[in-house]
Image 1 (cartoon, rainbow, N blue to C red):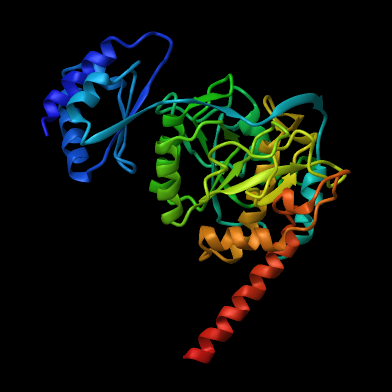
Image 2: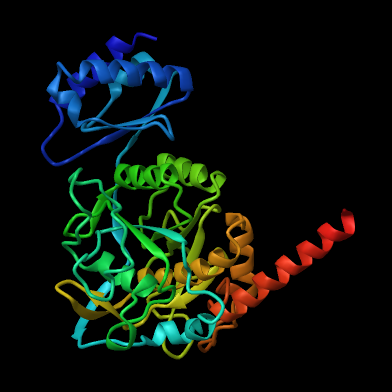
Length: 393
């Protein structure tokens, strides 16, 4: 392959790119050809400043390029690569009124997390939170946050300039004790991955780079409270890579109130989450359907907010953080669980949701997450496996 010619064509695409932020994902089919293109890029970008705008993901053999099209590229290298639009992706939450101090949010109690803390608090579990960052000054999060990564401004802390990521972090692992808020897994360690800007918007390429970072840094579980309507080959590819690396991905299904849902929750390798309200019914705004693995509390959920504050939010975003937290409690006791085993245990231990008039249980998918039932089932499964091992050996 003519790697120099490849980059010359891409330079032309970059120089012609409009200023509206259009980008393309260029994925190589062959690992050796990608390695050759990567080596050439590292050499050329020292002399060609425009190539510094390109980002790379070796995990899925892709380059992320500011470009409006790639017709010339495909005409010449169609056998070697594929090109797709780098789509925008949005968060799954709606902010509500501000609140004062929150000690024990209703959702944390609803999934029976406090009863589970005598068995597990999520200690040593590493949770990647791909979102808007986190408020490192919030007193309830001070002991829960690791350095993470800022994909928008490399070298800077992933500071939250939106609020959504801080809200998710609070539900996951706030540890404010009696004077602040408690999250589902208060001794888990959060790694904020800032992929979303202050408007709550990101590119697919940012999500790919975020998952790539989580794989490289051996994160145990990833919370992804966002989605989009369109299937992305690059996003599915990196989700599968994480799945095969043993990292569970918990993803929100979306807030359209419809049967069906958004990607990446619809990929079979993720744990798809819907939302329930305070009456334990599927929330009116939540997407639903057989592909939903489990539901979590998502209506008027109070949690941490910017400037050391608190706020209520509704959405499958909030539901997802409850489910990720419950999974972290189990992973602290059963770190050897595969993503598939974790998903099956979450589905098997979910409690029935209440039905609205005219609803059929089969049409909703899974039930409501329950941390205590999850830990008990995890313990039973381990004892059963140990007995089988003794019998065989």
